[in-house]
Image 1 (cartoon, helix red, strand yellow):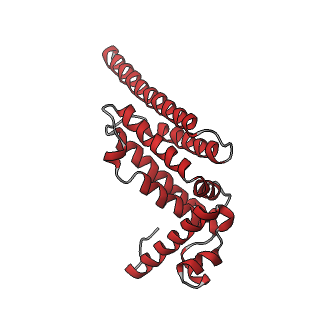
Image 2: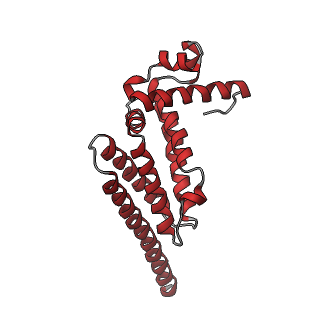
Image 3: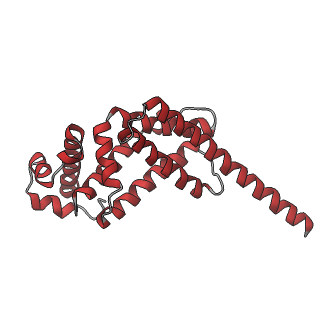
Length: 206
């Protein structure tokens, strides 16, 4: 979070996130220490703790930065004529980018799933970012989409675990998220239509 930071503070914080990302990309979760982050960013170790309560907190911020970068150019990523095509394109982009940077992906998955209270707020920010990107890809309001977003969040997390811990082929994982995206969206739309029909029938009966 960068609210309330001066320009210099925000730049310093961004430099710490960048340093942690580079260390994770090179050596994974174990390579990221607050000491090494401080050295790479050319600041004192106390400065790192001024912005981040723990290593997992810092790496969760790296995850948010990573997710923002992957989905930043949404018009180029969310390609397709239908909502399902655009949604699945974004899901697949996330999976394929994660597969291309497995060491980094493994580190951020470990951090995001850590039982660390300092991660809670940053994890919520990450999930809200992904949720907003998926909703923007669909491009049209879907009643009850909040529940569908929760399901897709679990699907994406499972996909990243499949890549990093289970070492499943990227094409297989990409197909799973595409299929899941289509099914979840279709289910949400069908539920919305059923609700509309039920309300109309009730109104007619009244």
